[in-house]
Image (cartoon, rainbow over the protein chains, first blue to last red):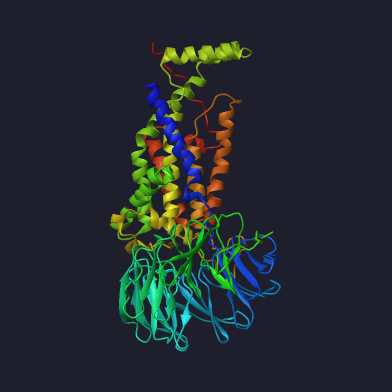
Length: 357
Length: 274
């Protein structure tokens, strides 16, 4: 009896100890990454960092000292030279920074919830989706609120535009088309599950491709929202698709990569599964696509799905890889460094690593 | 399973039961949290009863004449004191761990309940990804997500606060007047105060610690609720109210504790079980 009691308590102790290391208690950060020709802009934890790509030197960080900000969203480099990024912290602020210095230009803090999606800049207006279910239209130069449109459930995907309409996914299972002139919803299409990624437009801007947690990818007529085709995936689609001519590349959270025919949705790759779940969007390269996995690896696949190279960085990679010249930038979570740069051609790592210090 | 035993044995089953309740109460997450807390409290009821019984026996022992005598007699001989204490335990059939073992077993259950509420709310991309992996295949996760987090006047995924009148803003209360934080602090205070065991010994360290807990615990939980999702507050309030009810049903609520200086020692009535 005593032995049984001892064994029971040893098991109980082991389970209790595992509670401390369980996923439930780990951090909730989700890095966002953008880059121009010379610098990378990394939203990670409580800071935005600017790192020089030639040597990995830190140019600036925002804010100087940790505050109530928490950054999950991908920073947006606007055509007029701003870096706009929203905070998922209690401040609920959308910040415009000078990408050269990190100086704050304006702040919009009137949303009712946190920012997880990246905004979209069209001419002199910024369209920013918020977790409170509203799309906010702000004057790009000043951050002044022009109007807002309540859609409903949290908005986590960055909007895209064909120049006339704004297309936006929602966790409420729908893809929305919004007319920024009338500030009204033109159409909405059920995606069979929540969507956390963005839609992508075909080259002729007539068709939208978008994945959902309903384990499906859709081709949707951008003019009226009608479904042209839908294809099944093996698991939730978190990432944005990428379009390469007549091919759509998309990934799911089970770690499978799909190459679909843009006109029919037929998958031409059989069971291409790198080493772990994929939430970041694929990155189109001249040789094929690059995908990053939750297992902390970067894979380059050619247009037939053959692995050209792979590099293990460690940590967990949730964020989509970003290109700058012939470099591929990757921001893992929980790895030794915050930002890595690898060569697009062979996956070799650059000698510098950015640790935020 | 072996890489994450906590998730496999505790957190995932709890999360799925919570979501199952949510599915059956008209997709009302607030009601699901209340019913889930009641369910867990009901399951752990015998353990709580055993814990209270053990604690009562130990409490009564503290004012027993024979017990107090050996404390004085062997104050400088710890080894002998321990032997005498063991003798009294054996003679009276007391298990000194009887109140602490049920608490140990309840501990992972309470942590699991708390974590499952947080996980189900899935307020960030990473927690949503974790939730997706926690949900059993028969539950159809894509249909459940996103959860309807509106309950009464609250969004359970965000800290609670009633809006201040126009023009009034308080910088350290960014979400408005914290009604729920006050209710949580009040119910925690009531639960701790009402269930505080009386002590006859002015040097009793445990009593001093309990007394401090009546102040710090409500403040701590109130602060948590100010800053975290209000779904947790619904859990805290339900749990506190159920705790008072359960103690009351077992005759362990000491209403005199609410009065100034009302905490008086219970008479010694530990029977010798020879």
